Length: 285
Image (tube, rainbow, N blue to C red; front, side, top):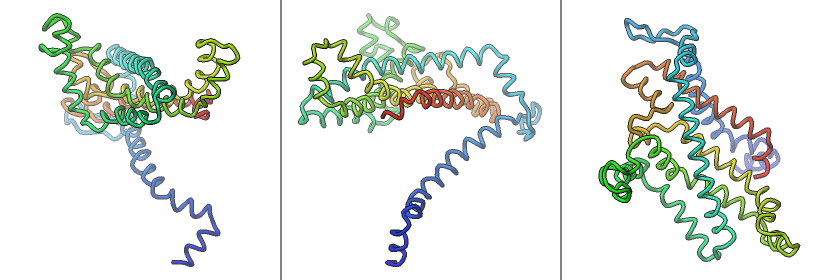
């Protein structure tokens, strides 16, 4: 054992390869492998008479996605919901993260971080159904708007509210981590040089804030784009990409078409990540 330890000590690259082999194997097999199977099966079709999967190359699924208006509408709606959720999370998370990083004392800072993380420990379904009770059927928010039928109810607006609540911690934490690295001396120097709050924010805080917001948006945008459980619970008749995938896996039993639909959010996120990567924002984290 000591001989092996000495050999690995003399070959740091081999030691690093040994440490990374297990997680890289899991990434290749479980994640990239699943994506590869998804992409391949998206080019298959289902026999309309027997219901069996025809494992022959075909672009029929993608032709249907491009030609049918309903799929374009659902894609645009899903993009709009994901963008709205991300925007709401940024607006709410920025002042909260700034207070945690620059205003709260170190004594209370840890407690605030715990308070932000606590909702993540609760079940996703419990939180979604709790919001279902809050939003309609005489719930507190429904009552606040004047009784049943006057509140947000179920639909697109309710979906955005619930998704914003669910993914808010994923936006707060990256912004908090970025602002925590910002030295207080830079803010003090800006004030000493006569810069007002707006000027300090644009020149000092914003360069740190933008990469953190982009990092948080990767989580909030992608999670909202592919979500279907919340839409099922509070969305009413609202349809998003995740619902179409779920419907074609379940009732329709058309796995190739479900795989073709699932490639839409994957493609959108790849384009988004490439754009973010080229902007250099992630390199500043």
